Length: 220
Ligand SMILES: O=C(O)/C=C\C(=O)CC(=O)CC(=O)O
Image 1 (cartoon, rainbow, N blue to C red):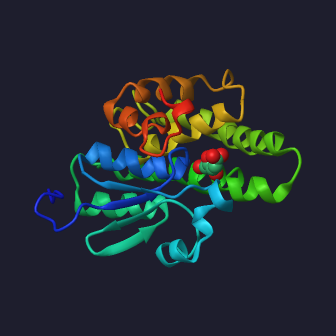
Image 2: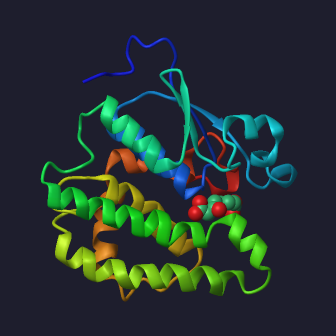
Image 3: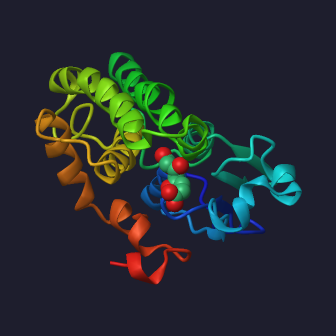
């Protein structure tokens, strides 16, 4: 296992406390036991600090997260998590079995391509009115697909009994669903897995309620 010990600098995560994509990366770093520094990019303040020229040089997509690690700067949460997985393989975040690995990737893609981008701040701001209904629609559409998939793939967690990238994507998306007041009662499998994961230390320490940039009134 390559650890961050002995490396010149700690990785720097550019993120925002309640960005679900930033939270994914925080969970992965916590699960791997990698120490890192956080650089807060406030998505609201001053019209959005992600839109500054300074941040554009870090991530040309002007989104969080970005991670500076091992002398490179990466964006896109799953690309970041795959890099961490390949360079710091323990504990693994992809199952050994190819079918289960594919199932993990399928669940990740449903969330990271099929749900979250359609309900993120940028899209919600662009559509104007009916923001909540818009977000609820795309979250419900994705969750309607995820629930029967998880019924087949889940053990204790999304795929079998090992925590994987699918779980890293699930918990922040359920948090977003709760923010948008999505009725979770039709999704008992997701609720059960989410509850178990929320008890795990790596998910707790990375939660939006306890980050350096969490506003005082939202602190747990
Ligand atoms: O309301 C805010 O404070 C601003 C932005 C977010 O939380 C993050 C998102 O755009 C949603 C997401 O990460 O999926």
